[in-house]
Amino acid sequence: MFNFNIQSEGDISPSQQLIDQIQFAIASGQYLPGHRLPSTRQLALITGLHRNTISKAYRQLEKKGLVESLAGSGIYVKHQGNEVVIKSPSSFLKAYPSAEKIINHSLDELLLQGCNLEQIKHLFLAEIDLRLRCNALVLVTVPMADLGAGQLMVLELEQTLLIPIQLVPIEELSFALSSTKSATVVTSRYFIHQVLDVVSLQSIRVIPLDIYDYKEELQIIKKLPKDSSIGIVSVSSGILRVAEILAHSLRGNDISILTAQTNDQQKLTNLVFSAYTILCDPNSYLTVKKTLQQLKENLIRPPEIICSKNYVSKKSINLLKRELGIVMSNE
Image (cartoon, rainbow, N blue to C red; front, side, top):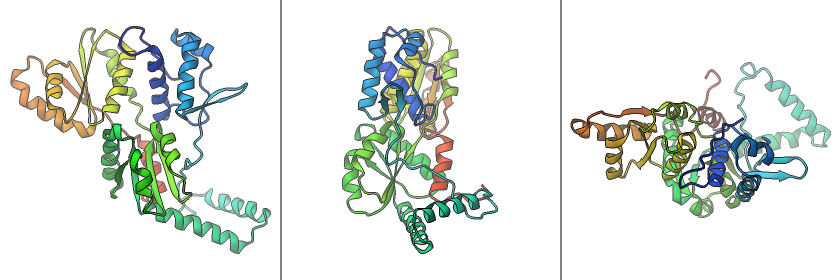
């Protein structure tokens, strides 16, 4: 079970802390589609929150399209209607021993439904052709208010996939797709419901990615000395907001939590002067290190800089590589 931590003191309401922690659990793949969330009674015992507060948080998550309530059963992480189930392509049957069995089973099922072999061949070739055409245009999309998260995704995916990727705000996605008949749209699970509201064409694939779960970084925050300061740096204001909520939920007022975007030099300077430890993403690391070098002579105790892993989880990157046909069978 996800480790919920709700702080009663502070500027962030307990209800909002709960919402953000559940969203993080979904986005980082700790709560997968179909996962049953704790009942209001269970969560009240775990968090100490009133059941009405928990019900309100669940209604907000349902309104966002992240969870759904099934009468008499409970609250579940929602399966998205357009969500692609990513499968590993088969280049050679020897490399994938079960592939032949899967293909034969699929053929038998289609034959039982009345299709002939020529029709089945057309269906398979049409689907393959569609996927190849979709791969020609890969878009990353996030809300305009959090383009930083999108920039981080694009940087990481381009470095890993070695293909050009375009960043398009969700607010402009409809216009961007109006000039193409096929594309692959990639987004975080945080934003999948917003993307599916925009995408209507069946020829547009939507692939949600899980973000890194930051378990190692959260353990670092847990072990920090009382009354110390933690600095968190990222290109994304949205990532900083969630990181601040998670850090606050772990330590409350035991430590000071400072945040800065890499393009805000004044806040970054203040953070380097004050922080005991600095956590940053790979694309902010060089900026943080450069700022530290510039200020080193004026620091009594230089902060320790810890670079986190990529924003997009390794599992999601590998699955996306396979879906786009980038990975060879020996990888």
